[in-house]
Length: 281
Image (cartoon, rainbow, N blue to C red; front, side, top):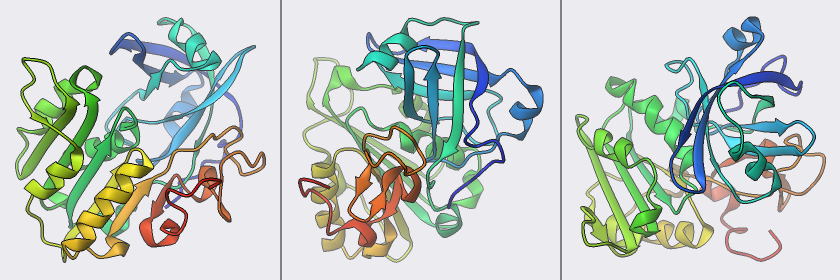
């Protein structure tokens, strides 16, 4: 499902209303369009992304982590890894940046309504699933059982810890978190996220799986899920590629015959299974 606005590919001015450091290199920014009409009209779907433009430096594709209708600000979780994100990390409340979007295909809301939802995320790339979790939590009665599995390399890498603790208290919700390496006071599991998949119970006839993370995790997780009779068409993945234009023109995010920026980033597993894990794609 793709959400498009009339102003989608126009650069709009926004102001940083909220800035939240999460770790030394990761931070949240809450944006508001300076044009009130644009701010009220802006719409997006969980799983879509914006292009954030830092004037004089460049722009970068960042997932939206807000709930589409329950948040007044549009939040983005950013990791400082390059020129643009480093520049964004040096901003503060009241500063302005440009925004184009939303872009891409979001999570399949119409297909998952009323279903049990299994969300599997790995590493620091869990942002595309966060807006989906917010969406489900704010409409809890529209979904069945919710299972959230998160894996990180080191326990210090876990972001959104307060979110996971809060989500775990929601009705009919199971939250499992694991780290390859842990500290002394780590309250969750240690080991690979594939071990968490073995711990959960789900009905393959009523469950939809949403995945976000590195491709090796996808491949290992899919194998376990299919072994437990989850249909391939019930598995969706958020793919990561170098998205520079967001409209399929530059070719940097080409994925076989598709472009992640406009045909994704959300794909149904059968549509891309022959490309996963292969160099050059």
